[in-house]
Image 1 (cartoon, rainbow, N blue to C red):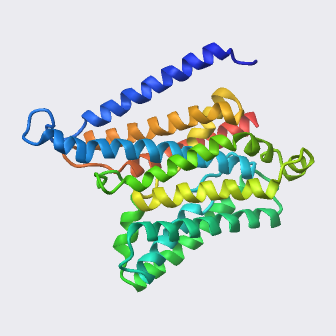
Image 2: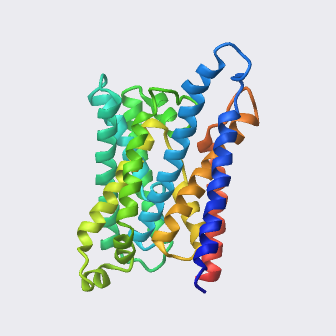
Image 3: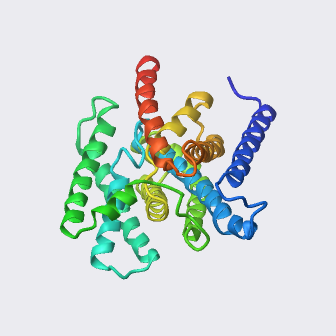
Length: 319
């Protein structure tokens, strides 16, 4: 049943208000008394504002990257975590640390993006060659590919005494975000705008190469654009924040279950839901064992694992 446009806009506005309220709560959460202590407002501007902006950019963009991957792979169970893209970005970051130990963060980021782009193309190349008799085979192939890449990364880290750096990278956290250390994340805002501009093309490409070609779409060019957006988002977020597991899997599926499969109308919902989920995980991690923190990635991993199993069961029952 088509959704009433006015009602849909009101619900979206309500979702935006809820997300904004969570962002305000994030700004107000912390050990330091920014309102009463000396230099409190300076601390507020140096740490809390950048942290909240980083959560907004990383949460929204990773959720949208997952939605794009699901369309391109025509499979609901893929996202950068389950296709090896994240592990390829991590390998790129490790290679940058080994080959260019004195390189600045933008150089490391570019190498991570290049590896993520190449790794995602390898994943799609494998999909074209394997007989896919079940929807579950696709994420299994991606997880296996990611495991191989992760094992090679661990070997390199052991050889070059970078195992601790690798561990820090895999623990996605916003605890170290402050002014001067998050600004590169604004790059993913451009990727989200590109995703919005190409939304209709991604929708057609998601119907398959034959249908997309028959309606005049340059299927390969759209696929490359999608892979580029996913690689940029994954590479930038990985270098600045770290891994945010299952975010791009759970959020698009929940939005799809609630609203259907219209990509353009779902994009703002996916973006807001991704931001809200990361905000909730980050705030929870900051208050549950205060003054210490649980990384947001840990909460996401726990929620995502149970969510993944629940989605498998829901899809099995409802197709």
